[in-house]
Image (cartoon, rainbow, N blue to C red):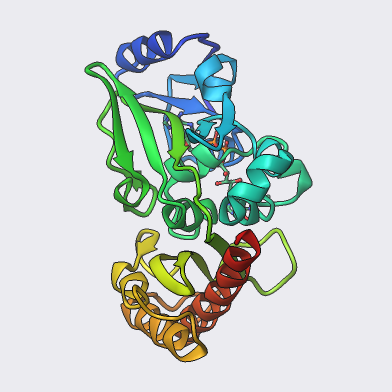
Length: 290
Ligand SMILES: Cc1cc2nc3c(=O)[nH]c(=O)nc-3n(C[C@H](O)[C@H](O)[C@H](O)COP(=O)(O)OP(=O)(O)OC[C@H]3O[C@@H](n4cnc5c(N)ncnc54)[C@H](O)[C@@H]3O)c2cc1C
């Protein structure tokens, strides 16, 4: 590895100036659990690493029942699931934050880094999509907000323009009757990459599903938001049969590849099973909220 500059800006503006100065040869560091591994593996030839951990806005974690949740881009997973109010209000995000890597990884790894790394297998992204999250992106023209499902444009690629950076992720406040769940299949208990994953949410009203969202991991070049699976449940009771139909739609939407972790057929099968199980748990959680 060549010697590179390590810089610790304390404001977003300073970080943006550095991104501009290094003209694409610098990257933001959050926890470094992807970036450092990838730099060692030769994925990037960088002149600088810009540490985001010393910027206040990237380290904020605020929640209120009125305004919802704001997760700074560098907030580590353990702070998210370790906050009982956040964990209770955002169960799908809590599920994903508490299964990324192991305890040591969760002490550093951020949800923001998980999103910006844009791996098809990223565990936090389907949960963020299920929770209707929005990414707040800063660039030379100011801050813009973009839905999380529009961030990933390919394996490891995002829709951010050169010189832009993630500041935070905003998640709306859940209302009564909301439930969510993220689950994945891995061949062992932890420290593995999802063969497939499902992040879902439901909003119940008067015993029926008012809104539902389904997103999948590891079965397409990007995390996959399956709009039609959620929509198929709207106005219906959360019965076994209606959930089975939505899960079948998720299975049909998946476009996995065969690799060392699983075949196309196995992954598609998992999409149905995981979506079905996740929806059942999300409904149970929504009822507990009622
Ligand atoms: C042992 C091990 C186990 C793992 N297990 C899992 C797992 O179970 N599930 C899973 O999904 N992942 C897993 N990972 C991958 C990794 O831990 C996660 O993707 C993690 O969430 C990345 O967060 P980070 O803060 O470390 O990001 P970093 O490594 O700091 O950054 C990741 C990428 O995002 C960019 N970036 C970071 N912050 C910003 C910003 N503010 N603006 C723009 N770009 C930014 C970086 O430049 C880099 O390209 C594992 C990694 C290891 C080493």
